[in-house]
Length: 449
Picture 1 (spheres, rainbow, N blue to C red):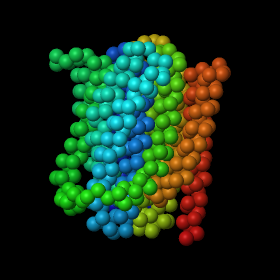
Picture 2: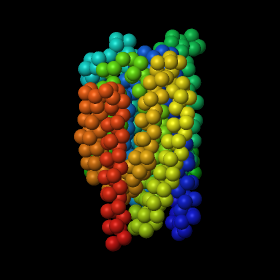
Picture 3: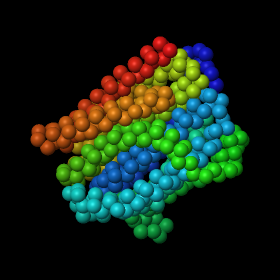
Picture 4: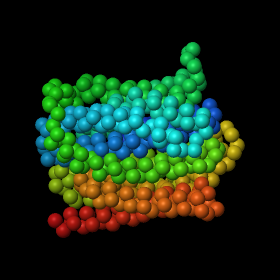
């Protein structure tokens, strides 16, 4: 990356960084989409089982994986400050930290999985599939977290097209493996929803290996000699990364965890409701990849400019990103309203599930506008390394506003399962308002400087 002086060229650079990230995020999430959609084609029981399993895996993977996103602003600031020689050391410490987090998660999951599933009022077949799905995923946790660090390193250098290529190469692998293991091809048994977990775990290894190969062979990355010398573990560096990463990771965890808690609370309803909810939520989450991509692009660009102390440029990138994000949200909301029935058909052949999913998708439309503000602003603030207040607002908005409101409406009013979605909309909107006020304060403070 380099300094850009005009608005027109800034827009061009923003799009240049954004588009590969967007394609990567959609492709990466498509793995979850194909897990869910292809399991749904097997049966509603398989769909419900994968829904429960994915709801336990998602907050762990995104929350703990979010800690490792700290590599992006760290590397961005080092590049902006022209301290390239410090980049390899920080990335390798990030990989060590990723493996440590993976080990702790596997141990914690082994100790708590059966207990968590027993707390839910699940049909025996649904519980069996959810457990098998998570056990299969466990084998892919170490490469998943290592890939997070490698991807953050590549993105921070501005080579977002490389991460796009890695993800696009892995997606057809995931689809083929899903087809083989879910439906039982080439002499293998049909594992159903459990097969989706096997396929995803194997795909994580492919993601990591492709990233390592490219970093080893690409001329630009070879300049960093990332693996030329392996330094000893540094607790001091870990603490610096965790100081930035933990607020980021927990902010993501509070959001994804709240969505997943809703799915788990849906276990009080029947299998059709769980399946319809998961289908609608899965598609809404795929649309969420758009503002999330804006967030990641803004972290890279704002972090680079802040590292070079070009605060005016950082402000301009922030406003460009927010304008683009909200404009696209208007378009996606319209398309979702017009094609909600076609979307519901993607997840099930059962008419009861389709009818209910269409209703859930109406509520999903309202997510678009708040997400279009909240998520990019989070990325901007990470570029400034301002992560503590967003952590607090996420906690309050999602767990002290969204979840209580949703539970009350679902349990004590005629809204039923739809009450949870109303609660989600309330929490996301509250968080968006809080983050907007924080960004306004940060930008005004920089102007004063």
